[in-house]
Each structure stands twice: as structure tokens, then as C-alpha cells.
Length: 566
Image (cartoon, rainbow, N blue to C red; front, side, top):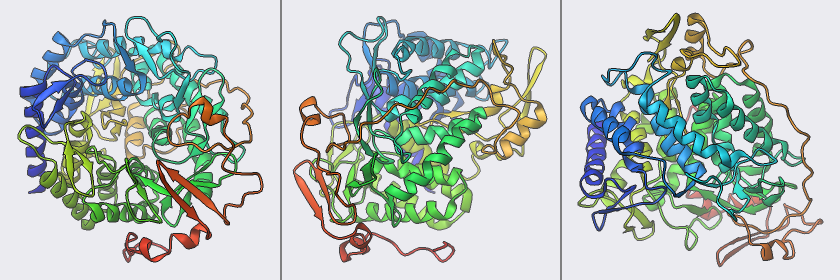
């Protein structure tokens, strides 16, 4: 029942985009027209392509591939976000390319190492590469598709904007045989970790020219989130145990300084002093990552907390003040984000716990009740009064509807656990495709790991034997000792200035950097923590572990299920 309701939700939104908004980037669901947002490249069309495949619509998939290859062009004079173009456009093209054969397209000789969508992917990546030409190897946040990095472009970008490329760039390298993409993505990932603090935390924004942190708040949410996600997923997809090693080194610090009674707060990266006692909706991806790591108990406890926030408002606001149990001013929106349902999808696959399906049903009901319009689904402007606004982000079709569909469709071919697969030949090489183990990028575009073994590389043979491919599918996170790929030469970690400025989750202005720090050297985390979010000021004068037990927080924390360890 729920699966078909989600299918109807997707087609209502997709049909509205195609009727009223295409070829613009996104639909405006209140005025029923379109507008360009991230790059004037029919973003929603590319982002929705593999969702059509997952729902089994071969006819529309084939039609959209032709539209994309015939009409979407990247040789244009526009500035684009490197991060967003990578996860949405490059990720969507690569996923569509890898699904083409299953969707009935007559692929050319040499597929998956050749094909029109793969050539388009390479074209996009080549236009993003100039951003990585920095002394640190960390990319700028913006490029011009024709001219490279714009003159005067700020060198300050967020941690996620530096470390969220290895899935897409690694996939492109393995399919084309050109290692440069994987190498630059690996260099960027290592550069962030090489600039970590002495307590193994990373900040929020960094100068890609100097390696100096511009915002030293550390957390798992906005501005940092997909850096951690890609360490785990990149290690699994590309068999890069060094990435898993970084995550395993980072996690103890996350648990020590950021985790407080199954909530994750924000803290200074140098001392671990709490700066913001908030839950951000973007953080809801984290239980999914923990599920992939096998920490089911932690994932369950955390996701039950997050679902209680959903039940309080009907949605998860962008920010949620944990001590005050409310959404701060100007952080009260819900732009149809997918992160919570993403974690539910992973958890349900791991546990088959029907309570997770009930949580998914809550999410579906809320969106249907409040966000549906005549031509699509609208972002929620304020979770308190459920007012909506005139935007439908492309990730609603790429992620939110996809993860909901996969949550309720337990027999979907994407859930293959290695029980079936197809032997595919490329020349004299054999590989196994469509055998499961799919790795989803940050925009929910899945990559078939078996397909990556079909193609040669210029400098290294990264392919696996057929038997090893099966073993990889059955245990994708296991270290692959004989298959490490290229190693990066690590630079010495840069020194971090031991100061902690008051920052929000964006790069501060220079005058703010010069202000007196909120935290003094003799400040004690357990004596006083000050949180400023816009004009709301919360002063905590108790130890934090006591604060989150107060009455107004207890209503947010659901009691653990019987099978969860204390």
C-alpha cells in the first residue's frame, strides 16, 4: 500500500516538473513554473533518472536518456557549485549510465567502460577539475564551466565541499581507466584529515589555499556531514581501507566530544567545548552510516530520537534546540529533505523491524498532508504552522521519494544481497553486474560496484577476480588487503591556531574573525556553554549531561526498544 502511494507521489512531482518546469532546473510548485537554481542543466531531469529505473519504468528511462544526451550541454558560460554539480549531475549521469543495460537500452560495445552518459560524465568532471588546482589539493567551491575558477572566488569552502567526491570521481576513474579523478578526490580527503586538530576533530570551513580553518565548529551536520559519509562509502565501493582507517580514527573523537546521550552537538575542534546544543535535520544521515558500519544499536537509539522530533512538528526543522525543544528563528523550515528516511531504509534492511516502517509511514503522511500542491510538492517554510513556499528541490525526486520507495519495497532489485547476478564480458575480461552491494552517493545515486571491475585503468589493474567480486558484494565493508589502489603521499599536518572564535555553520566574515573569542582558555565545558543561533541566546549553567535530562527534553527522547542495549 505505502509503496504504491510513494510511486504516486513521485509521478505527481515528476509529471509536474516535466509539464510546467522542464527544461529549467527545478519546479516551483505553487506558481507551477520552472526556474534555474544550480546550473541551468535540467537538474531535476538528471537527478530523477535513476529513480525511474528503481521504480521499473524502462520506457520513460529510455526517453529521458535521449532527452539528456540530445539537449543537456555543459559547454556554457555559467558559474556552478562544484559540490552540488558533482553529487547531483555527475552522480546522476554515472548512475544512469550503469543502469542503462538493465533498463533495456542497447548499449555500445565496451559498456560499461564506454557510453554516451559516461562521456557526458567525463565532460562534467573535466570542467570541475580546475577547482582542485590549489596548493592544498582542496577544491574551490565554484567553477565556471568554460573558464575554470572565477576571478576573485573565495578560497573558503566547507569541509563537505572538500571531501565529497571520491564516490563519483572514483567511479569515473575505474570506468574510464583514467586515475586522475580518483587521485584528486583522494588528495582532497586526505588534506582535510591532515589538517585535523590534536583531538581528531575537523572544523566546518577551511581556506583551500592556506589550509587555515575559517570556522572551527565541529559536528556531524551541515558543512561537514558527507565528508564522513564518503569515508565509509568510498572505502566500501573502491576497496580503499585507508579511508575506513580515517573514519575509525575520527569516530572515537566524535563519540567523546560531540555525542551526548544519543544526540550529537557542535563543539570547538581544538578543545571540544560545546558551542551549539542543536540537532540539524542534515544530521539524520548518521544512523544510516552507523548501520553500514554494523552499529545497529546506536543507530536505532539515535533514529528514535530524531523521529520524536518529527512527531513533535510533523517534520524535522533545519535546526532543533535540544535543551529548549524548539526550532530556532529562521531555522524552522523543512525543504523535503531525505536524510531521516535514508537512515530508516538502511535500518529496515538490517533489522526488518516493523516500527521502522511505521516511522516511514509518518513521514509519508506528513508530506502528503502538508506539502502536496496541484503540480508538485512544496518545501515547508515553517514546521510550527506548516506554511509552505514555492520550491521543490531536485533531491525530492532523487532522494526522498527513492528512499521511501526502497523502504517499503523490500523486494526491489536494489536490495539484492549477492544471491543473483550476471556475468558480463568486456573484451576478454569478465565481471559480475547487477549482483547488489550498491553504494549510494550523497544524492542517492547508486553505483554498482561489480561494474567497476569491468574496465582497465591506465596505471593500475584495480579489477577483482569473479570470486573476489562475489566476496565483495557479500561483505562490502571488509578491508580488502590485496586491492588497495593508488596510495597518496601524505603531507605533514598543518598547525592549527589554538583559538576558538564564535561561528555559525558558514564561513565568518573577516571582522567576526577579529572579535574576541567566546571561549577563554580557562573556560570549562562543564561550567558554562553559550549558544547563539541568530538572536536566540541559550546559556547553559549546568553540566550538559544534566541539561539534556531536564523535563522539556525527556518528551523528545523516546524510550529504547527492548532489544537495544543500554
